[in-house]
Length: 302
Image (cartoon, rainbow, N blue to C red):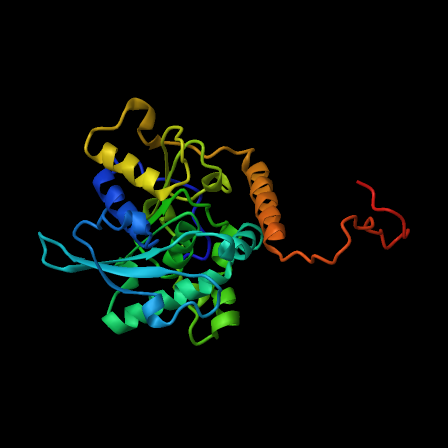
């Protein structure tokens, strides 16, 4: 297997937005929100989910579902694994880890879930679609690459760095054990531009954190740019020919210079939310003394 990810090439063939909309449905359904209950999943049915199998095991918040359908033309069963994105403060720790280190705790749950359902249902993960929104799309990319999946779908998701892709076997071996981790030569890093498709809305910050492998298609400005419901509706409109010119998804090259700024903004926002999450001590003094510099024992300079 190729030990190094390809340059960030992208497929040049016409995008099938019907398929993209279909996978966005699953990325939305895995959230299990009451307001999404009547939207359905098309001809996909849920086979099982992470909660039913006793997850999370490594993180405090994780959700995923295995879906199945029968291809009308071939009569063969098709499978797709969808990972849920962030839902609130319980995911903030993992969001910071994902942004800074690259391997959120949910990654290990996500990989184990894929391996478990593959063994239970006799699934070939290389022929299984992986999909997700936000952090869920990041997990879909990470696990999809680890499993040599041919089709990975990301919706308003940050991309995984090359160095983190190369570190997947070692990270899994440390946490899950070498017997459960793939060998470094087992992972195929070739043709990532053909295997990964990333959709984003123009004013979504999360999806701009890093330059992505694969086809990056960008839509217009939206009132709720990060929402999976927004993404699903945009793809549905484009698949049915009802999209306005400003909402059309078009191939977009990733910006070269804004990645670090976006990353800093994301980390600062997440840390601020984490600080608010910590319980406050009512007996603590309201005016805290200034932090000391250990070198000069004086007030810390701003």
